Length: 319
Ligand SMILES: [Zn+2]
Image (cartoon, rainbow, N blue to C red; front, side):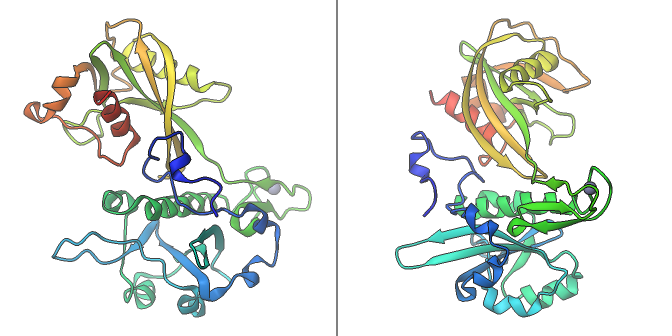
């Protein structure tokens, strides 16, 4: 059973990538023999290859793709000691328990990986496919990508530079240098994202690198020694010169591209005169609910439905 049900999440629907339905079974990670104890007939693999995930092939009939989780029983023979196996958690239905593990196959060439997986589907970028798949599958893939991104960058100890080894079923790395022995844990980078409002208007901006016409809520990373509220107020002032009050938490969204956790807020503007910081943002402006509803008439558009920024905007418009 999962520790929480999505219906219990303060009566709101979880954001995309935010509900895998898996019980992470954290105590299981302490067992060094965990892999041998899995029921291999009930174990599903989440394969990764060069940060891409496995989906059913997109076909001409435009059927929605599905995330593919092959059985360990069928794939196990292709594994060797170079493959790191990470335990993700368990999923339980009325009759049985299914174990989920993820494995990065990036050490294989395209030909080699296709020889194993082409019978199941094709590897695509989760960011491209995610609007088409269900939240549970998308969240399992986001979880897999996030923890794999961390492993890829932590083969060596950041303290002494020597090699690290994988432990705790893939949720820890230990420095192998006897004079260091530092333990490393997967990191998540908190970022705040906030909808600032003033009466019927909200503050939206755009980055130079975004597709032309896209406007979204302001956002930025939390710095060391800073509260989330400080980060929200600092980012809004830095980018738009606007002072805010009544900062309210809304919801969060894992965004493992490579390792962010987006923390969504609403805030009320105390001032309305914008002073754009062009080094940080290309444009920022006040938009009424009506203007946003007819954005396409001005050649503008909002971020995709799967993003927390869109959720903040849609919930505010529908209030
Ligand atoms: Zn070390």
